[in-house]
Amino acid sequence: MALLRISSPHAQRAGHRTSWVMQMVILATVPGILVQTWLFGFGTLINVVIACLTALASEALILLIRKRSVAFFLKDYSALLTAVLLGVALPPVVPWWVTVTAVGFAIIFAKQLYGGLGNNPFNPAMVGYAIVLVSFPVPMSQWLGHTSLTTSGETLSFLQSLQAIFHHLPSIDGYTMATPLDGFKHKDLLDSDAAFNTIPALQAASVNAWLWINLAYLIGGLGLLWLRIITWHTPVAFLSGLLLMSGVFYVIDPSLFASPVFHLATGAAMFGAFFIATDPVSSCTSNRGKLIYGLGIGILIYIIRTWGGYPDGVAFGVLLMNFAAPLIDYYTQPRSYGHSKAKKGLKFGEDK
Amino acid sequence: MTMKMSAQTAVADDVQDPSSQSTDSAEAKPTANYAEIIYNGIWKNNPALVQLLGLCPMLAVTSTVVNALGLGLATLVVLVGSNIAVSIIRNYVSEAVRLPAFVMIIASFTTSIELIMQAYTYELYQILGIFIPLIVTNCAILGRADAFASRNPILPSAIDGLMMGLGFMVILVALGAMRELIGQGTLFSDMHLLFGDMALHWKLTVFQNYPNVLFAILPPGAFIGLGLLIAGKNYFDEKEKKRIAAAKAEAGPAESKRVRVTGQAG
Image 1 (cartoon, rainbow over the protein chains, first blue to last red):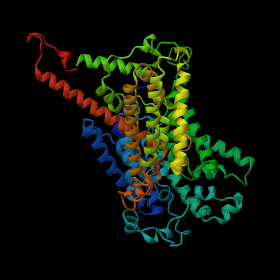
Image 2 (image 1 turned 60 degrees about the horizontal axis):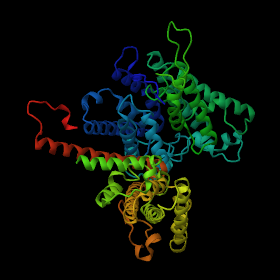
Image 3 (image 1 turned 180 degrees about the horizontal axis):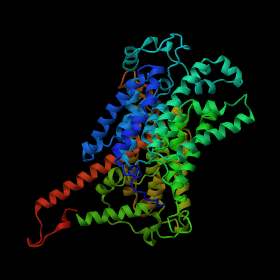
Image 4 (image 1 turned 60 degrees about the vertical axis):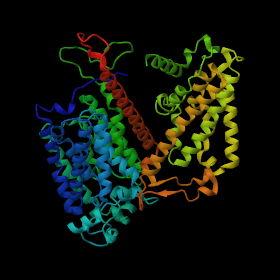
C-alpha cells in the first residue's frame, strides 16, 4: 500500500523552527517535573540528566556512523525531548542502566534506524519505555509512595536518590509502594469502596499526589495548546475516550470499576494526552484523523488498565495506535479548499 | 566474472520462483559447480538471511543456543535426506504430482527425526514442541526440493541440502547465541539436553549478576536480532562490492582514454 507522503509534520508549526518547538515542549514538562520532584524526591531530575546524556551520546554516535552532520541534528533538541519524556516517565529510583537502555533503544532503534527525526513510525520515548517495561518488570514497578503512607515517612534526599539509582540502597523498600493504578488492579476480590479504604496505594494522600502530577502536566499541556504547538484534537479525543470507557463501566458496576475521575487523575493520563500522543511525527496529521487516533488511545488505555497485564497502558496504547496512524490518515484526508467532496482513501487501480 | 554472475543469477531466479520450473526439469547440468553450491548455501542465497524462509521456527525457538542448534540439526538432516530422495525419484514423478510427492518425502523424514529426538533427546524434544513437526512446512526444504533437487543428480543435491542446511543452522545458532547472551548473560546453557552428560559444564556465564532482559528472549527480540544479522550481511556484501569495483578501477579501463566512463564504478 502506498502511504500518503506528508512531508515533515514536525516542522510545520506556524513557521517556527523545529528546535523552538522542541524547546517549548521540554519547557512545558517543567511543572510536571517540579511536582514529581516535590513529591518523590530528586530521582526524577537525576533520571532526566542521565537520559539526556545518553540521548546526546547515542544520537551523536549514530549520526557519526550514518555520516550526517552531528551538530546540526543535535541542535534540533528532538533527542533531548525524547530523553526528558522518558526521564519523567520512568520511576524515580529506577537503576541507571534501565534509563540508559530505554533511552539508547529509543534513540538508536526507534528513531535513527528508521532515518532520524520525521521518519520514525513509532514514538521513540514510548518504544524505549515499553522495552524496559517488558524486560525489567521489577525495577519498573518500584514507584515511590507519598511520605505519609510509606514506612520511612520521608522523601528520599538527593544523596539517597543518587545512591538508589547508581548503587543499591538497602532501605529503599521503606520508600516505595504501588501506584494507585497498580493498587486498584490488585484489589482482587475487594469491591471499590473497601479497596479505597484498605489498600495503602489507594489512600487519599497517594491518589492526591498523582492528581497533583496530572494537574501539573495538564498545565504544561495547556501551555502547548496556547502556543499552538499542538492542536486540541488529540488530547481531547484521548481524554474523552478514557472518560467514555470508564464512565460506561462505572455506571454499569461502580463496585468493580474505578470512577472516571480516578482514571483521568492517575497514572500517565494527562502526560500521555498532551505530551506523548501529540508527537507530530508518529501520530495522525489530519484533524479528523487526530480525533480517531486520540479516541483509540483512550479506549485502549482503559482496556489495558482494566483487563490487561500492566497497571497503566499509555505506552502500549500509543504504540498500537501509531501502527494505525498511517491507515487513519489515509481515510481522513481533509477536503481541499474549492473542492466539493473530500477524498476518502484510494480505490484499487487508481493512480496516485 | 560475467559468466559466473549470470550462472548465479540463474540459480537465484530458480530459488525465488519455483513456479518458473519449466518442462526441462529432467535436464541435469553437465558439471555441477560445487564451489558455487557451497557459496550459495552458506552465504549468497542463505535460506535464513537472504531467502528469509523458515522464519517461524527461526524466530520462535532461537532463545538459546541449544534450542537453535537442536532445530538447526533436525532441519539439516531433513533437508539432506529430502534432497537426496527427491533427486532419486526426479525422473519418475510426473510434473502434476511432484509437489505432493515432495511433501510426502519431507514429512516422512520429519517424522523420523521427530521419533529419533523423542528417543534420544526427550527434554529438548519437549522444549522444541510443535516446531519439530512444523519442519515439514519449512519453505526452505520444499524450495530446495523443487528448485534444485528435482533437476540435479544425487551428489550435487546432497551437497546443496547440506550447505543450505548449514547456512540455516549457522544463522539459527548465531541468533540463539545473540539472544541468549543479551537475554540471560550466558552462552551454551543446558547443552546437555543435546550432547548428554559431557556437556553439563559447557555453560559460560559471560556476565555475572545479569538482570535478565526479557525482551531479547521474547519474539520481538528475535526480529530485531535477525534484522541486525541481515544488516551485517548487507554491509559486508556492500563492502566487498566496493572492494571489487576499486580493484577493477585500479586495473585501468580497457577502453580508449578519450571516452569518459562515468558508470564504470557500479
